[in-house]
Length: 184
Image 1: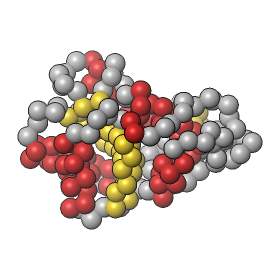
Image 2: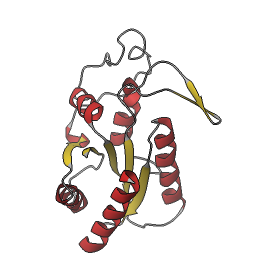
Image 3: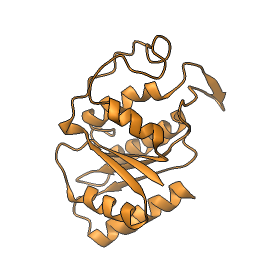
Image 4: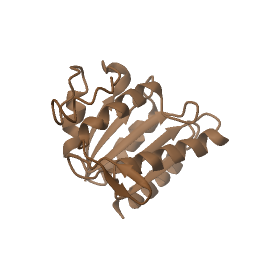
């Protein structure tokens, strides 16, 4: 399996190290992007990536290597502090730009109008970190990951919320469960 981690944390933390170790132990190829150190412009929602420059964003910034990595991966991992029940602003900027990865057409799935993906359907893992590990923000985060999985036509997805205080073995167990869920 090939995975791409989009890390929306403001600074590096030990949970990503454990995640990387766990995936490498399972023979995954992993590429990680620490978004806080990258220049990523906000999406202008101009639609150019769907019509004028199909599959290519007109904004020139550090999203280019992310687009290339995502086109080749099997699993996208959104790793973020939970802020107001959602992704960090840093991750949100990158996720908004993923429209480039979709076709400008629509298809109906159930009651939803969705864009088909341009580079195949990627599995999604949503990993949130939250100091308090309770409340409606966690519920909202899980729902956001589920909705993103639907919008991205992910064949499987998984989400978990990690407290920074968790023991390493507990984090590993949770990660192993997530991997089983996305790889089926």
